[in-house]
Image 1 (spheres, rainbow, N blue to C red):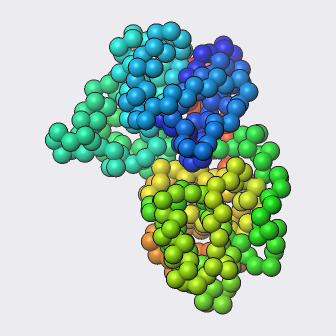
Image 2 (cartoon, one colour; image 1 turned 60 degrees about the horizontal axis):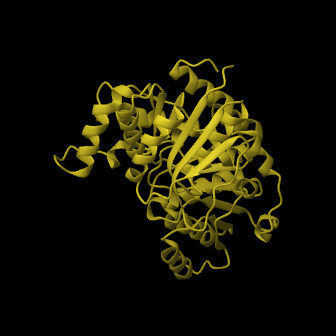
Image 3 (cartoon, rainbow, N blue to C red; image 1 turned 135 degrees about the horizontal axis):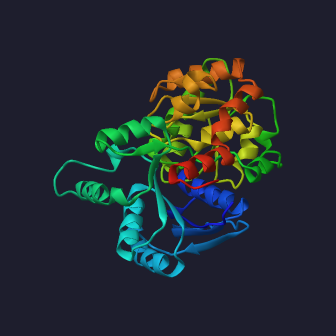
Length: 367
């Protein structure tokens, strides 16, 4: 295998889907012998990017994605990468413009992670319209354009007729992640089996639907099926969610302890993982729960949950924004958990070897 100089680029680092996926991707590429640069626009406050063997890290401190442009121009001229993997549409366009202006010969793969309906617009002279024009103008320079779910590919082909977008999943299953599953968890709720434990995880933001999840747990408790709920994560909706917990008088059953560096160990000790989002790209956290052996329950939001759970083979699907149906799904999962060997089957498409092989095939590179 030829050793390649590869840049993995992402706008920000946070303890959430896209940044973690890019960090895992960089680590996996370095682990198989490539020369890897991980370029990050900015890091969320009070966080640091964990080191990874063989990965050179550059955090630029750019307040906005466009602030990465000058650095990328210098990087293309100075470092002459063989391959660049970027993620998120604004950054993909900036990377492609920088490659064009510098005459770079790098193979470039741009990955889209959110629905194009939230990114682009046909309303003339708006910011989202201008971004759509720019993206269309520079798309020729991309050697591959990818999305993280098949449903999202369909959306992009609707917004950009004739586009070359294809589906490539994020890396979720890799040795460093599996090593975390068996580590201890100090939180007593994860070691106490007196009540079934439901876990949710993600940014505490409105589109994550955690209010629906709290209401679903309230429905279960009032219906004579007491459970505990732990929501891992942090964000601006915390005050509203805490107020809802008090309003429903479920303080003894619901906790929000904040972020954790090891959600996988928490998932492994829970009975059910619940995803209540109103929108996703492809929820890596569902795959993480499956990898940890935790039965997933997810609302059928666009895009990804139905695809990850394969119409319900690997977990339970419920209606979106419907706490009663979510409660019913959690009850079904508690009564009929998914067997570990079935969950393992669902994780296979997200293994690092499978994902890297697919990326390299699209770029015409021998893996």
